[in-house]
Length: 320
Image (spheres, rainbow, N blue to C red):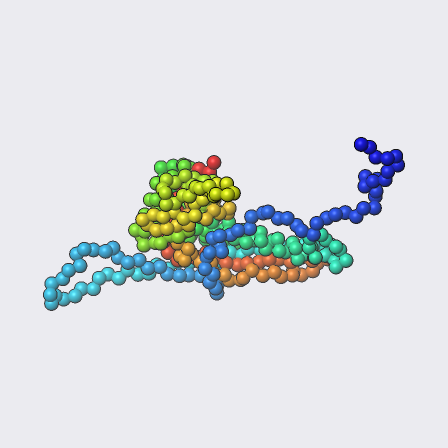
């Protein structure tokens, strides 16, 4: 078939208005499971502190003679710990022309509002990545930014790492980063051992944070009580999921995380970590210096590890 002679069609027309959707499709990841689960507390200083307490070891020899004098046992003092708040700051500058009411931007009413929303989402991801980062607390100065220590800087009791490959624990008070060792494969034995150690220490871990790669490894763990693979009648869907892992030492939920290092697998008792907020997230306009407008989104907070013995981790894992 062919067009009749002199047919005028859309290929010839120069006056057709563009068809641009008013929906902007964004598939970038925005989930921050650890930051979201952490209880939020209020900080009143850039350095905030807390205390931990340990009981003495139990003994089976607590028997005494009738009428005997009583001797007091040695008191175990509390341990005083602290962390610093970290300033998270992002800004965007938009020309006043682009942000003018007369400009009709597809998918958003004002460019500034849209871009500010984006940097707020990005900052939340930065916070999640910072909480998972292998870094210690830094007091900061007028030439050095303050830094809050990540989870790695606290965990030393219930951890599995490659000591033979150069791996080493940090001090355990949040002051320094751990030393990474030669990477090795993630195994169920490593995971089960850390689960047992946390139970012996008194912890009640309930969430495992791990990367997509390590999640696929965990899907291969042996055990009828932790893995489900089935075909749903009617729609022929095959479901292979690892929702919870039931062990003698407790039940733990697996939560894939995009922001923690893939070489680290964390077994966390959620209520033993909190985020202390000195300045909640705020969107403020900065001083005008020309024919443009700048706004910043700022948050200041720090990570508190209430007692590291309640959680654990498997470190130095291969990631591919």
